[in-house]
Amino acid sequence: MVGGSRAVERCDALKRPPYSEAADMLFRPYLSAAHDATIAQLTAWMAEAGMAVRLDPAGNVVGRYESFIPPQLAGEGDRARMASGVVGADSCVSPPSGFAGVPPVNWGDMKSLIIASHIDSVRDGGAYDGPLGVMLGIEVVAALNAHNIRLPFAIEIYAFGDEEGSRFPASMLCSRAVCGQIDYSALDVADRDGVTLAAALESFGLNRETLLTARRDSSELIGYLEAHIEQGPVLEAEGLALGVVTSIACQKRFEVTVTGVAGHAGTNSMALRKDALTAGAEMVLGIEAVAQAGPEDLVATVGRMTVGPNAPNVVPGEVVFTIDVRAGTEAPRDQAADAILQQIQQIAAKRGTPASTRLIHDLPAAPCDKSMMEKLSRAVADVTGQAARPIVSGAGHDAMAFAGITPTAMLFIRCKDGISHNPLEAVDPADVDLAFRAMLAFVQDLGTTDE
Image 1 (tube, rainbow, N blue to C red):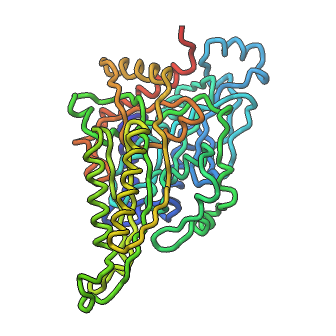
Image 2 (image 1 turned 90 degrees about the vertical axis):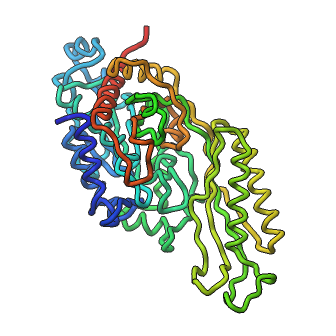
Image 3 (image 1 turned 90 degrees about the horizontal axis):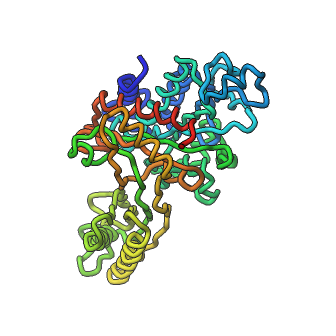
């Protein structure tokens, strides 16, 4: 059973232990026991689909389905069969059986199409945000392999270990490592329990010093494709199963630390307090006001806040919170971010609670490639009988990182009520099957030349 229904079933299977850190909700953070169990299961599914599988230095699962035999190794009969652009496995040099730890075969000049998404989740998240794109990539390869079809390029399925940033304070850590967009200074981080990234990597048999060697060179790639639930209401409102992403909004993320003076709740008078939490609360409202005064596509969110010492009878002495600012283009986002940071310092000075800010990441808007969008739109129209709906993504995706090194395309899939990052996340298997068919048509069309 190859197709969308199996992709959905596999996502559902991964929302329970051992693939989740909790029995009563889905939580799969990077480099956790649940991540490790998911790697093992994905390795088996990728191998079953006909891929050679490895774990890269950043903790990403990578399955590779080889292209047809390289021309320099082909005989005359092979070259004749290759002239059609798509050939059967009888004219291929077979790749090794897929299993973890084996690097992809070196095929010289043959390039790859990456199909990818992430397998980590937010705390109490949904089953399809991320993993559905990985499962659909596996289904595409399984279909090609079942029909002995090899393309003029390899297909590599990446299951990124971290996109959400739900464990360490930086999102898209793994795809940015693959794209060469982080440096070692960004790896000096720890999770809420004080476990450093270096220690977490070591527990996985990986190494902080070699993590950045997961980088891929743009010369090795022909493009990147990601399928993802929409995480919004547009497709459902318009009665459409699929949409083609034209661009991904730019974003900046900051971490703010507000320092007050902790003290006894009963003996510290209100007039003399330096309460880090009330200062932080005023800052949060100021952030909301800046975003509300901006253009429609500007949004700002405080999504995480920790309070210390976090005791009911102690005035908070420290608050740490995040700020996520997004817009369709850089100018309004940057203007809002500057205004927010100014407000934070004004409030800090007024209340006597110093505030430090740290830029966690700065991601530019990521337009998708025109040619890739056209091919994906054509595939969507062919399988749905409707013109493809162009749509801008307000959410960030791993495709943002790849837009800097190779042509990218993204396919959105309708999700019920636009709900995401929530256990109520739901998709229709029939919609997912349309996505599978569109992706399969897209990868085969990618091997041809436009007239």
